[in-house]
Image 1 (tube, rainbow over the protein chains, first blue to last red):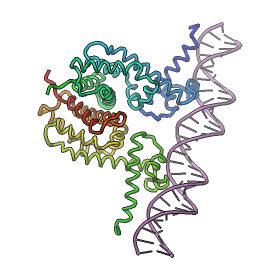
Image 2 (cartoon, chains in turn red, cyan, blue, green; image 1 turned 120 degrees about the vertical axis):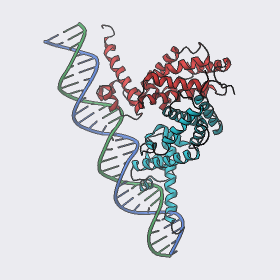
Image 3 (spheres, helix red, strand yellow; image 1 turned 180 degrees about the vertical axis):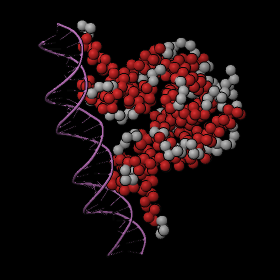
Image 4 (tube, rainbow over the protein chains, first blue to last red; image 1 turned 30 degrees about the horizontal axis):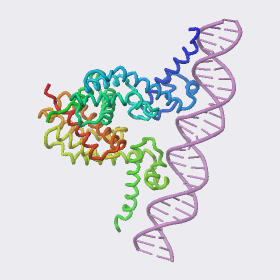
Length: 189
Length: 189
DNA sequence: CCGCAATGGAACATCACTGTTCCATTGCGG
DNA sequence: CCGCAATGGAACAGTGATGTTCCATTGCGG
């Protein structure tokens, strides 16, 4: 606690604010800074000390979100198995992001602006879908860009279904995976 | 033009404001009344003459939305054909609602609050899905409430895909229908 | 125990949106 | 042509969020 003690306390408060911001903003994108500060159990003054303006906080949230998305994408190992298998792994990994799902879905600009999507994930995603088209595990009628929309809309549907209905996290994910499995499977006819 | 002349001019202005509100609010739920008035090519004062407070305008938008949704649901004739066929007709009918899709999706309370969902559409929807489960056209693993979420999330995905990418309305709808068809089809395995 | 970092609260000016009032202009029917 | 309905613009006060400053309190390390 000697060398990085300053960071210890400050980093903890900063993380608490960021986490509260993700939770509150996922429910209401226009929530006031006061609400976020309260949710973080922090005074509004303190919040301003860490993020001078609202835009600074939003930028930090975007960076945090991009970071978590990148980690989840890495964990999904898109290059392994059939295209469909990788897509389902990616779906499950993203589902664990929780509140962040609503935030990314309702404000895609937050994480897509900093040229993030084309950096790491977009190319890998396209490669995965192309593999799926080639190995016959993904319906060739569904292009990669569309499947990206489908993936996110299903994730959002599953997450809001989880929060609205009396259902376990596991059951909600099962519904999403079942639906997505069906959706991408090529049908013989 | 004698008896209802007053309604003629006033009704036209009112509809222009409502349509502008739907278009603007679908892009930004927190748009100011000034933006809506400008989009409707109407002074802000005039807007306030028709809708005294913001909540009055929102209520009118909700009523208009509920009306259009009911008409679209009727046009889909949910009682005819297999459950899956009816679901696809409903999807196509809703897709024609355009901007309203984003609005309903981002603020479901707008149309669901006035006890609308359980009035006409919800029961018919459940009956349709039950028929689909029975006639083997809809995967029994997918409950009706979940399919409702899936339907709306797919509609939203298709509509935003249409506005984001270089693609025709028909092609976007084709992608949605293809995906939904696959998603609900029971798979033999 | 002292000192500094971190924090919380109060107070303040600023700003955008809102809702209202008043007045001038337009346009159509009688 | 007159009168009324509809409209648009300007101005205003009220409200809530924002960003800033100042000061008191807490807590931990030296």
